[in-house]
Length: 336
Image (cartoon, rainbow, N blue to C red; front, side, top):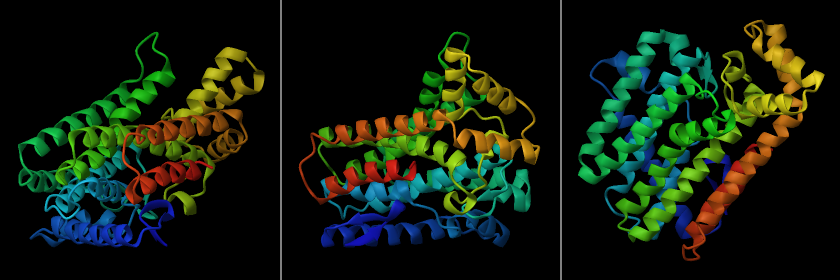
């Protein structure tokens, strides 16, 4: 039994373990090849986050989903490279928008080279992903294009905020479905689709990926408040400092509006103040870590992970299904 992929997922089946390890190794090679340029500086910038590591969550899902068809089909590894390149590109752009200074335990690209280089490097990765995608056929291009549209739409909706009268929590969960769920769903879809799995299986795994992706991001929301930089690989409270209303903050505001407790209102006022001030930021983190809103966000994470697990019910029992179920548990464990 060996730990494979993110969160130390334990794969108990030797054949599955070998397949997944081989697939992820091939993806790693593909990522390095896809991020090479004739211009050495572009190669350095494009490989900055590739070489920093990462969970390779999406390629792992491609590999596991491919187990329900021909797991050696030629399109599986390239499709995993596509989804990871797309994910990496969004990280370059996100760090510019968030003015983040740390990513995966290293200086963010924008902190190292400036915003313009970071944005253009993200664009370079999108271009390389499209180049690989073109060889996978028109259906793969369409699936990726639809997912990318949802991803960008989610980012825009997050920036714009909820319309008047819209429940902020519902709005936020819709945002996550676009920003994170869409690409995780495509990871599962590509793995099953490229392996030639039955269309019913493809649909089941796509639904699973969508729900797991939201749970994964909700766990990140909890970690942004609850963890230190060593655990998360980035500066704690980054979203908090930038005023991005993640789920723990939204649950706090919901509770403050419903109960009108003085401590809740005071914490909301602190969050509305200038959190670029280190002392205020530290105090806000301390109070949120002890607040019931954080536990509510954990419960929301569990709910989405359980929904993902339930989606797998129609699939036949096998080692790959067991591993996908365990990923639901691993996501919840991340959130504490």
